Length: 202
Image 1 (cartoon, rainbow, N blue to C red):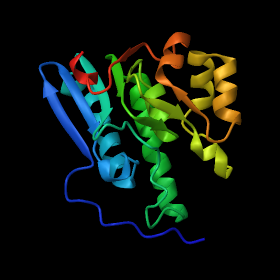
Image 2: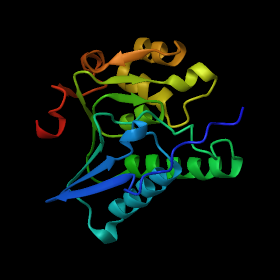
Image 3: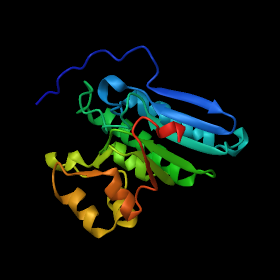
């Protein structure tokens, strides 16, 4: 089935960069799509992470990865007009790999600040960070399993390592399963929960 066309991408950048002293904050900024990761967003995120992790540029003291509009990320944007185009899919996968490799190899701590939903690729992005701090109402899940897709960003290994076999099995085997931040905090997959709306001020 041909995917439905989406509204034109707003002119604003899909990734916002803020520097406060030695702390850099990268904000996924497509709130009209719950910060679903478009090709343009992934390209920008990969480019920014390459620059931040390049020793020649001087590493920041820490990196915070968050989302605009009260949501971290609802995952890959499957409503992009060229979603089923194989060549564009290969481009997106390359950007994904670059992003995850940069996060894993970063010579500084990386914190995911999660509110709202962290689903699919958004969950994988959060789990690729060193620490996850979440609003109390945040929900985590892997909706792609309901359509026969497989998480491609390391969610299987990350969930087993950080949340344990029981929760990992639920999230990987039960379509539509959502796990609250407080449950993941008890298991150690989320390092801290804070009141909703206070995430970057606590």
